[in-house]
Length: 474
Ligand code: ADP
Image (tube, helix red, strand yellow):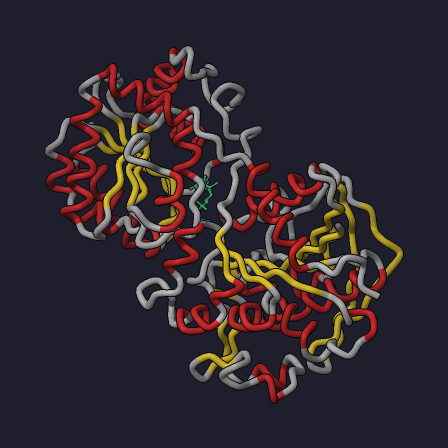
């Protein structure tokens, strides 16, 4: 089958989180199954090696304004990546915005990306099915079913829409209908109107042939008011076409047997390298090199979603425990201050590094004994899956993908989003760490779990086959 994906991110070209990871790995996994896969993303500032410029150039028209664009292609693991080169829209020193805030015309930027994907489908890569990702891709299913419904080229086009995080919906004021040149009849409750706004995410849900999200538990949770961000009613209305497919992880990057960022590789048969990683991590972070004391790691964006405020709420208790804490991340300044404050007050227990650091994130995964993710919600989550492979026992809130990947055999889960529940889970973990034989069994069981992309790719492929027209659309 020929699949054309459209996304705002794809690793290694552009990544701010899990979305980028998925678009860097799922297409290649589908290609290994024999599918012909291409991905359309913007060409942002970062130069990309090995691209070639296609002879086609397009005028992307958004509400009467035309943006000239060229297409650069790069092939990676048998997947064609089409990078839409339109400096006016995409080369501005940030993906969605800069330190000064989000770009005010993101609706135009991603409508233009949708137009580029449609032009690529028309002239360069004619797919059996479109796969649009997150709100930035949400208008694609809508256009296929509305303004393009009578276009002979797209007559039989089908689309799948994936929600990677319902917390980001791409909602804009109603004035953008005109700016985007959208037919005003689409602005209605059964269409893309959402509490007086225009919602790209809702457009993707309403008009796609199938909706997926990145874990089975998250697929259920987003249909409830607690996790639905107001979209739960829409999702319940479309529940018949909603499924959860767990993300995979890239074990060619996240695997202690081959990891080049850690001092010595290791495996479940020989854990000596893990002890070395712990010593290296403690030394790197300026903590006392005490192997016997349990070490808890955190690597994360500091966002409300991630629930780090709960760690702050149990800090007095946590600091009374004989355990260390290493934190790598950045984001919410209140959370940054909370962690930095703990490090300043308890320098022999807590060490914090503010920033994004690929190498250190591997060392934290390898060198910690436990990994903490107290998320309010977590569509899939990747770090807990990395932790399992590194023998670093996850302590997680039982929500979304965390609940689908961590079990009481391989980790520690808590249900309520409360300091008390978090504290009991950490207390259980610290107590269990005191029994080396059973702790080792837990680690090794986690290391043997397999969340590689191949299984998830089969699930996507089955879904595509259920929806695609059997022959390429005319
Ligand atoms: P989300 O997409 O919500 O941020 P995920 O767990 O799905 O969460 O993916 C986060 C990805 O970003 C992981 O690959 C993680 O290792 C990486 N990451 C997050 N923060 C940092 C950081 N400060 N330094 C290095 N990598 C980070």
